Length: 341
Image 1: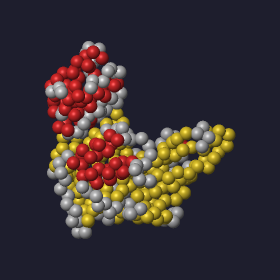
Image 2: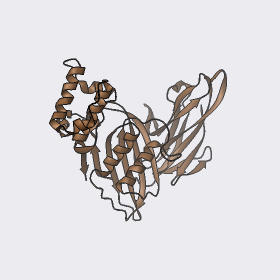
Image 3: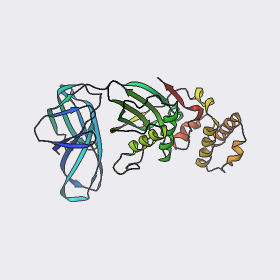
Image 4: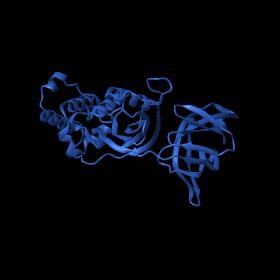
């Protein structure tokens, strides 16, 4: 594998190719696009091109920023076929200003194919943005979900006169509804703001959710998490977006403790959705919605417990089984924990 070239993507999306061998100067909000070439022989499939910026030390490569992208491999079982791929690495405040940062790439599933590295290739200039946590939301699903998750960091600018006060829970509810349309769940959401620039305000939204299907969002070329958050911002009333950038990484999510403390706070909508999804999973006859609407919240909770006793052997917790099968849907309602700063 070889690194053939790199490009600097400046806001609002203009790519500038860097002459091979020259040092790359990057600032916060930029994206480094790394282009690669390699020869492949084997069955058709998909691999992950992984790129990282950091420093090379005696103990190995210390990664600071990274990105990854999928590459479709052709069916080439008898001869080597030239293949190309690119990976974007967003420049965020996770990296400090400095000189002589290093860069490397690899095929994540097959690192022995080569891990080309370029040393002392990158300078980071400018001052990192200073963000203040404005709002934090922990969704009900976060109290019971364990497994793969996607962490997306969405940054954008608005004119300085756009108010930064948010209606409590409005953005959180909008984001939850948009993600549910994709058949997935939101786990956590945080909103940060930096008002130090004179002419604009910098925003950063961090959203953690269960993995979304591959593809693009509602607009051609827009990543699906970006499309979801842009739609949620419009619903919440923040519609002026001058420039934006997004990066998504994958992680293992471990549920928040304290389910027994928050479960009594689930509202009626949450309980009804949970009952219907659980009945569908266990192939039981769905209770008519009007019947459930006529029950009190305590009666709905008792019905859930009774159903669990009938379907799951005694002594086994039914929540991990239901969640593992993806059958429990939690509404926002009273179970949503939102804190404003």
